[in-house]
Image (cartoon, rainbow, N blue to C red; front, side, top):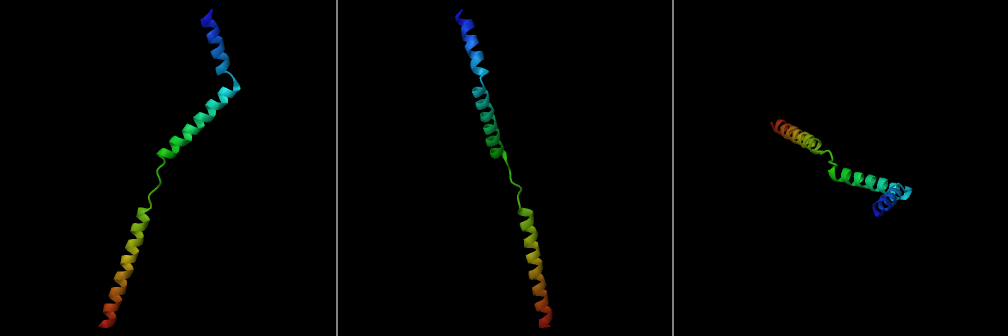
Length: 71
């Protein structure tokens, strides 16, 4: 008889709206936490490399302009 009362109480507790709501909120929270932990930003290094190439090209152009003006 004790086991059947235990099962009845567990069934009532697990099917209560408060417990179901708390479980749903906890799952959503954990999902958000794991999403944030695994989020990887896109690196903007290629843009920086392109900017460096442009700067180098501009410097080379200035150097070549200075050389041609000296001649």
